[in-house]
Image (cartoon, rainbow, N blue to C red; front, side):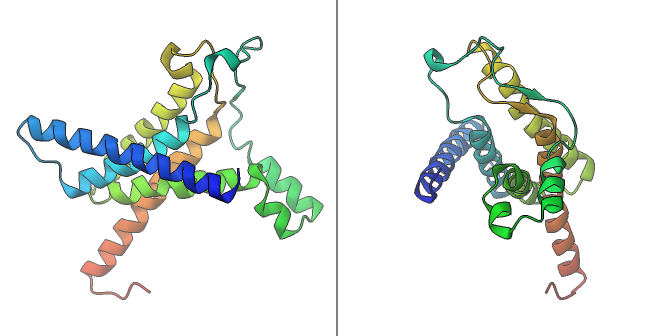
Amino acid sequence: MTPVEMVIYAGGALLYALAGTLVLGLGVRLAGHRLSRAAATFALTALFVVFLGLHPFPDPATLDCSQGGARKYVEPFRFTHAYTRFWNEGRPLGDWLYSLSIVSPVMNVALFALPGMALARVTRSWNRAAVCAICLTGFIELSQITALYGLYPCSYRHFEIDDLILNVTGVMLGFALVRSVSRAKQRGQDIL
């Protein structure tokens, strides 16, 4: 994917998330309540990562379901094999930066830190944050492994247990970062 395609893809994800957040806000408003700014921000970031995790939708006619669809990877921390191999081979920085198997885990954590940061403005509870993290990433992975709950004849995106681990880690790191900064501000400590 070229940089221009990445910007277009991310822009589409953001528009999708914004539309979903507006619909959610309207629904809450019609029920006689208001969606807080913090909750709206969490919804926006959560829908953004959901879009990135499920799109692009393929043409069902082009899916090859002869092997059962996309592969399922259930070995935890499988992504570390690529890091170990690159390290042992002494690969240059450029190889690290342009390898999907190297960059993807980092991007998973970074992208899922966004909903975690927004979630810290909704709740202070670590347990609630963990449940939200598990539900959010679980929804995405379950959608992938079930071929969007049967809408497709077979799964079109691969399921990885590492995605569950990395995504939950990202949410919790984002949550921890904002909680730590908030706590430091309350104590009057310098942040940087």
